[in-house]
Amino acid sequence: MTSIDELYRVEWGHLLSALIRVLGDFDVAEDALQDAFAAAVVEWNGAAPRNPVGWLYSTARHRALDRLRRRTRFEDKRVAIAEAMATPSRAPDVLDDEDAVPDERLRLIFTCCHPALSAEAQVALTLRTLCGLTTEEVARAFLVPTATMAQRLVRAKGKIRAAAVPYRVPEAGDLPERLAEVLQVIYLVFNEGYAASTGDALVRGELCAEAIRLARLLRVLLREPEPELDGLLALMLLHDGRRAGRVDERGDLVRLSEQDRTRWDQVQLEEGRTLVRSTLRLGPPGPFTLEAAIAAVHSEAERADETDWTQIAALYERLYALHPSPVVELNRAAALSFARGPAEALPLVDALAEPLAGFHLWHATRADLLRRLDRRGEAVVEYGEAYALAGNDAERRFLARRMEEVGGTRGALTLPE
Image (cartoon, rainbow, N blue to C red):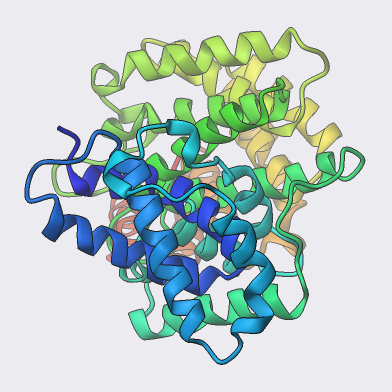
């Protein structure tokens, strides 16, 4: 039998989106759904009904309607309630039709990722509503107190109400731009899991898993192929497939070149490579697909010295032409340093000093090039700058070790890959 905990994790977004569609209120829907899960713990007593999802939906809906009836603003909700009650009433334990719970998650994704909200609010609301993370879990993801995150979520939902953000999928003409926003939010969730910006742990596997789950869900809900969505999913699978090799038993960072590749998840990597190949056949690749292609090249090398750095540098060049940014150029320079040597790459990195002076990976990359050129004193200085700017403790420990190795002094970190 599916446990209540598993139902919560898997079905929360499905149920919540359906309730929001009926009730028109995030808070009422959330409270009612929490009540329904609490009631299930007591009433099921280890024996779930034939359709537990239908039971939870029906129970939450009835509880929400009861709550709305007690509100002084009940009249304002009468249309939504009338629509909700239009479905023939049945006892929850005989609700056995899966279609009785409409799937409105696509509307919810686009609502949570609406441009009226800040990027941070979009990510937090997506984790809370679509992924079913508790407020405490979302707070941990942002490394803030639970009360602080609760206030942020309240403000985000308040902004949705105040801005009258429509609970719908964008029109066809608006869909490409809005889909790009949704993909960016999913990528932000993954990126925070793959390389946590702050805190002690480098990798937060639960966030990586949630982002991958969201991308898979979006593929199902959209029904039509979306190459950049497939590219994003491939990118996340390829990066996450290397997760076990990225840290050692103490949780310290291990450079890509030093990772034990037998620990990589080859099934997940092959799924990612297959997605990249199929997406590339659909037409000119977008940024996520190109990044996935780069990750695929890395994943194909059985040993670090077999990596095709020339191909990786060429892919970064294509990515820069499509999506010019100093960070992409920094990555291209790093790839060129392995394809043609650090002396050729250093001027390219130096040219990025102005836009990236506050970015710890620029200093770490420059330090690595200087180390390889045996300019050790300069390398130590750059490792120190990277250490001062890095926010993650695992990265800082890595930089500190590298500084010791290069200069014999304590205090810096290195380039995470």
